[in-house]
Image (tube, rainbow, N blue to C red; front, side, top):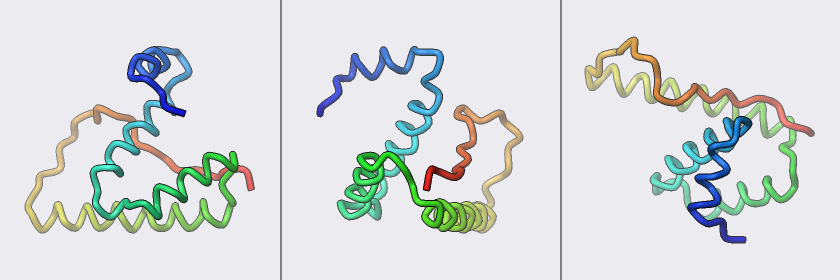
Length: 100
């Protein structure tokens, strides 16, 4: 099913579209990463089709995300990127348990 840009823009205007917006932003970033290839895309599609995420997968994803965040922080430290106390343009995504 192909969703049109206008449909998405309209859906994002809805009061309850926060998660849709968060997922679209995360997906956009993932699609720009060459490491997010076809195998990962197929897994995401399968999770969406199944309608749930097994709790063991959620736990592993939370651990991996924490490791990823530490890697980014370490990289910023090495590069001398200053920490700015600016309000982020997007809310911080918090992965939480799914149905499983």
